[in-house]
Length: 490
Image (tube, helix red, strand yellow):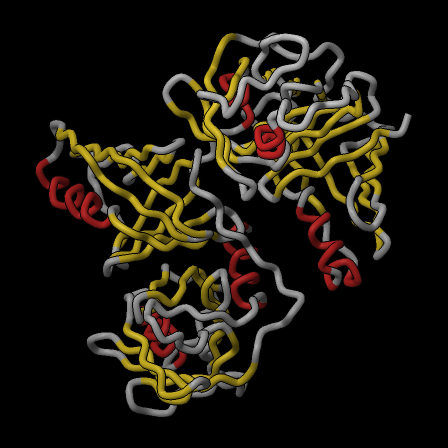
């Protein structure tokens, strides 16, 4: 099911055109719909249903139909090449010549081919023994589903392919694993571990700077592959993510495909504690000498900005911190400069969390701040609930005034201005701390066409962590597509 959903997104969704070439003179964008004009010097064979062979390129990658099945994979243009993953495809067997033509196109796109532009709407994609000429036939839909690149801080990735070749590591428990923390990264392979510093240099680019390597006993047959990975995972790398957090790294002639390692909701407990700004920008205080402080407890937070105190619900979902204030806050008339405004802004901006020695690093579009752990926090706030029960009705604090109703029989109903979507929910397996798995049924067509409605729908898909306030008036849902704040009707 996951592969089919990803495939449909690749074939049917897209983005605004933008420059993708790594050169001083911007080249046209590959984003758009294309017809295959020639394949290996000949006109391609039309599909068994008479449709012409076509391809689509967007943020997610590529999708297409070249005579038999619909298919798609991750990919993007970079360094005058197209770096792509293996295609996922429907599984209809159509026979010659369709199967061979389809396989040839898929292999070409996953081989890191060169891109040659013949004009703004004409290009050639070539590998050693293959050549495909394309002509643009249209732009992409405006109301598309766009997956934003995930900031790498606090993430772990396990890889399955390097340079278009599946990983084969006999005896290894897993493929190469990249762990990215506050300002350090670790690449583990069967034969060596590489460590170093890293920097997020752009929305979808990082700089990996290896500093030391540690060898260990391993199967000699794996040594070469381990060395290849250490060489590929260095320097400036560009990446993109799929809708299920798949990742494609590319740079320096290498490309790597992998998946995010899920930490689950159980990790949130290990992040609990009292934190101060490391080396604080000022000794912000009022009526005392108390530094700005963040206290993270299980499903709750307390924030002292040097002048005022606020509190509410907190969920750390896959190393992203989501907060929902209870509305309880002191209202001191703060002297300018006495409160740590930047600290507060970053904490409240849904920052990602990376571990650093002795504390945490919080990073968001607002900025980055280092926190020093100063002590333990209580396990949680009294009265905070993580359970859904029939009869609960939430008003979602999002554009459109939607509501979520929990019904008997583990059913739920999401009511939006565009229509009603129902489905099932259950406690997520092997998870704790209010992890719920939502399984929505098909949404009304009007909601699928509405970008705002689709954004709300995505919040109730898959695993979602839940926290409900001690007065049963506020609630926080957090999942892979962000957070949804809500009020619980009494």
